[in-house]
Amino acid sequence: MGKGIGITALVFFVLFTFISFTLGFEIGGNDLEIAMIVLAEGILFSSTAFLIPGILSLIGKPLGKVAWFYALIPLTLACFLIYTIVIAALFPTSFISNFTGYLGTGLAISVVFSIVALCGGYAKLH
Image 1 (spheres, rainbow, N blue to C red):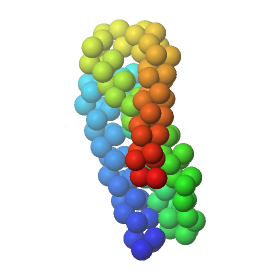
Image 2 (spheres, rainbow, N blue to C red):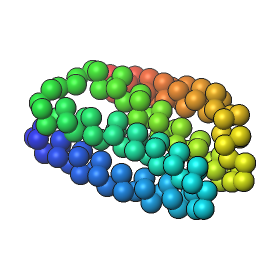
Image 3 (spheres, one colour):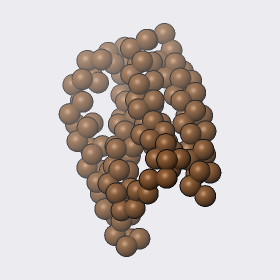
Image 4 (cartoon, one colour):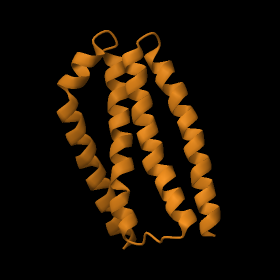
């Protein structure tokens, strides 16, 4: 059972890596800065959400309750990816200045939302 879940997670990692390439260059269009930032965030998200748990599952290392704390990283990266896409859609011509200008706000909102979502999920299931 653990090996099947691990292989499935690795397949999803490959799938989401290709989706990251497509999404990055589709959103970025002619602007390479937007494309590279979205691509990097997508690859970071897919590696933390699928690659690392897949490898740990193939090795046979159980996560147990640590999985809830580990889920904070991919959820934060997913929220931050949404923040980046919103900034890219709203300010395509001055992306870098607006991205860095609201970077602290985007990170803070991503982390707070992730903590609230994980605490709510953990409280509901335990």
